[in-house]
Image (cartoon, rainbow, N blue to C red; front, top):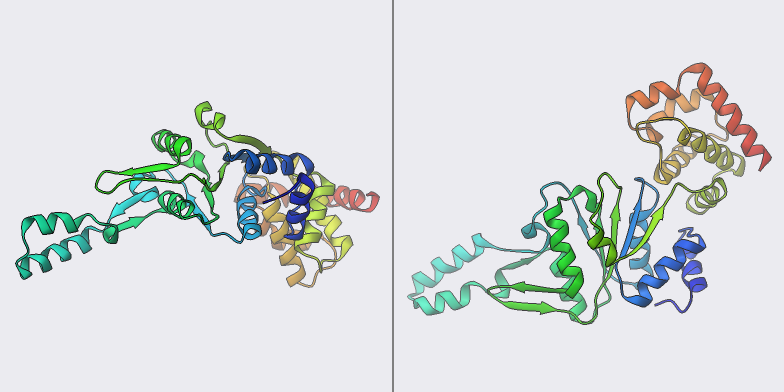
Length: 301
């Protein structure tokens, strides 16, 4: 899809995703080597957005599997439509169909619900470009992780009643983790790994300008510097890039052109999601000092 790392980096920039050289290289290698891309980092740093951007650039569907505790194969892979099968059996019985006819028509593709993993394999097998996002795999349990490991090794699914569905053209796979638990080395070995950290001031400012082009430059600098100050605090959940963009959008909606302590207090819930964090930040003396530092940084860069 991309002829070079520079071409990939430029394509992402056109989609308003600012990817530094190291990240662009990893994405390029995952494409060239046909390996899954494993992205780790704090929540809100842009991991999921990479899969969305790839799908847009490829003009391909994004198939997303959102992981959670208790996720099982039926939810992720496939399950039979038992209600439709039961109705089908009753109709066959009423028509006097033989037992052999009922058995042979019961487990067919018409009664199979494809879940995200099977959808990705099927579409790839048909030659369709596909992006599979396995989001927040650290929320799923180790049994599902082991199953995913097997799927990524062969890109095939065996359904006992139908047989094996396999693709020789694997989808582009993006796996993300917020590192709430460690992922087994066996899964990471099959992927190309990259840690996405909070961005530098310069990178985050570029992201803000790309995502909110109408924001006054002085406000963009002030917001970016203040977010950097927040991340230096011992918060339960530091704001990610997603919160930075949300905050800028909120400030524009409020017709603000500069930060003030009152504005920060009024909009703290946009960037901080825990009351203890909000109370720690909006303490008057601390808030004023943080704003002064952020303004000085914004003015000096």
